[in-house]
Image (cartoon, rainbow, N blue to C red; front, side, top):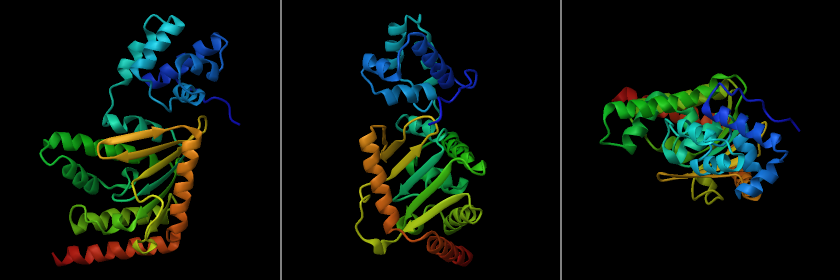
Length: 280
């Protein structure tokens, strides 16, 4: 099993907090589990704080300052960490996503953020906030595009997405926007950068009918699951709960089209949108 990941404390407040927490815990002669018992959290949670996978909350910062007699160190740096470009319900998931080595995602309605084009992301943001100012939408789109830069690395993270057929058929923006979005996914598949399968309507009822699911694995921390709803999101790290969601994902994969057939369907639907765009 790999040892703890060495963080660069100068890279971010999160890395600084994680490195300092690990230093103080080891200096006190405590294991992650022993410290967790004093904070009323799990040992894996402490490990995720130390590795930078989890964002430290103010409540935990106060507890740690008190426990280690840290003279406000954790609270001061936690305030800097609290400033996120993402909505509160997604901030922790986005930051965990950036550290993941493997991401598996089932998308029931929309193209996952990591696979979105700028035009598709803009259409989604306008749909979410139809009365927002232009600069607000620009910031939201920029945040999504910044996330997609994770795929600029040729191998990490490994991304395996299962798209419900509704994702392909639901028109977001114009036919041109949809054609470009689906061609973008097809290009990533052909470049062997991502694995994408389509769950067809013909699959009928399945185990993930009630919502989206994202599974994230890390080199130095236990896996996590993220479930998102309307302006809400839950990050789960309980091992039994994560295993249950892993089974859910595996069952969805079992019902989906094989990758080659999925690519053929994606490109076929993209071609339909292109023809529609040409006729407009």
